Length: 503
Image (cartoon, rainbow, N blue to C red; front, side, top):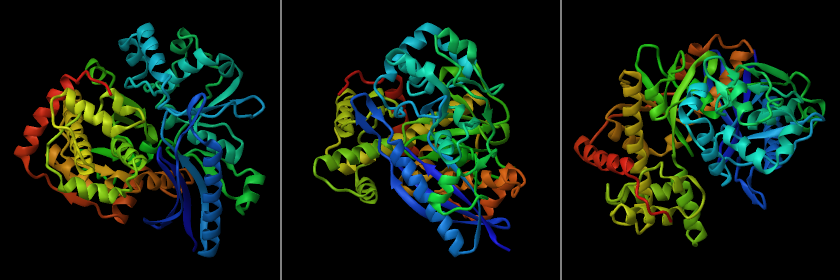
């Protein structure tokens, strides 16, 4: 009997990978077949994603998967794409892509965010969408687009989020998957429907908003010319996974039903949250704010975005611009040897969210908050990691207060879980047991939700049972409580009064 395999095309904001998720009974293993960088490009109109380059890498990933499946006698069942949220492409009636997708870090979004918040008001916007207020959300991107080039929105037949766009290239079908649509701040999480009256109030066209489909929906077979390019036969089809990468990662959290657990999906962004049966749209949730995004089988991902390893990535990029050459492992070693709690930052400080000379931004923050400036790479990275762990603690305390419950175990998954220093810092800062892994939770969740859609896995609990049976987590216990308590008090002071000096 052939083992079944599902190809997860998992695109993050820094890199992408094509991963075969191979299932034999209730055990799975992974085979990476392709890995590639993903970097936005700056054009005269600002930051855009290189969609043609990503498409080429997607094809190469499928081609390699088809070849490997044939050589190892695997039944390659389906393909599915997950990516980061909020970003999109517009497709016209003829099927043509109307311009290059913008990157969510584009500078134009902030002004659109401020105008929209002033026009609608935070209370009304949160009540309608249950989404956290971030200038990068699709809603504000569309307001910015409507200001700069409104004709594009009116020509669009369908708005497709980044994974939907790649599914369209593969199959010709314009399906919008629900979990990634829920990141847009344009969906009511109680109904799963677009908030059309709100969009019309803002003067936005809505004809391009198609009905969403749930995670695990079979889309279509590969287009004949695509199948020929990758060497596949007509049986290979696309099944939509949880197309938002965090939704796929949460689907693969190896939690049992007998524990009170929450999760951190660690990567360029860190997402800390809990899985709920229904949205939590309250004044307390809005005050933070937490977001309510769609998960598999109608669940809600109640979470908050935290800046994440973007801080370290940007420090590394700047060090390389200045002639240094550092592997992430080397930077982590230098951070481990640096003085603890020397400099802390509010990771949500607005200048930290945009590209450009992160070390200078951190030094400016240190000056403004009357802390010693980090003067070498180890100090910089230790500052980032300790501050990130303290942001986890702050967010967990907020979430427990809003939901009125305690979470005893934290599951830490995703590519960032390979940073063992940050993992231990997280356990220390949180004061909770942290179960680390799997690092490839997003690809695993992607593949197993495809298996769910194909009828080869029974339900979401079965998905998690397979993950628990296939990967042993690393168990980390908290240490140094007094030192972290003192650092947390300093961090809370920073968060309550962010220094005003900008770089």
